[in-house]
Image 1 (cartoon, helix red, strand yellow):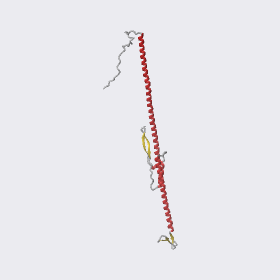
Image 2: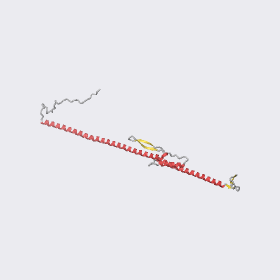
Image 3: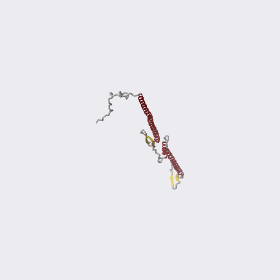
Image 4: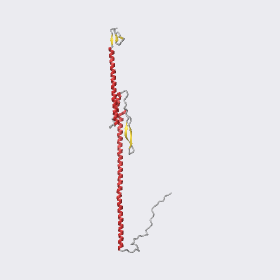
Length: 239
């Protein structure tokens, strides 16, 4: 089904018609001078009114254009402000992302076998990308059971890993302090162990001296132990 197309109506052919002003009509009566002056005055007044209307239209148009221009300018400025704010937010998120990744990478690199892999929390920016805004690296701070010397070496690595970033966080400083405390405990344990070892060595030395002093050689070549009822005969080497 076709839709009819409406076009503008064809104007009638007016080529055979002529327009005459009243004074040009053949049957019109000639006007007096006063009538002609009155008619001329009316025509001049009509033209003046028409010019006045045109002037007001032009003035109205000129008054409306600045308003439209100012609105468009305001929208343009606002668009630029919005774009600028988004750009600044993206730059801020990108800088935070670099800072967080470098921070956690320092923990992991120095922590070595005692540090886990970095994990991050993300925020989506105005551009739709995800930026790391927080992170963490797990570090083993437990002492080595029964080996204070190994504990000290481990805690030295842990403390260095906690202080590895350029700007350690409060949590990082707490981990470093904990590692230092474990090192103090381990040194005390080592001192106690050495003290016990020294005591045991002293006891063994004293026991050996007492054993040597408690033995004597009798004239018949018998070695007498001062312990009750213990005698040992030395072999005769003269034969």
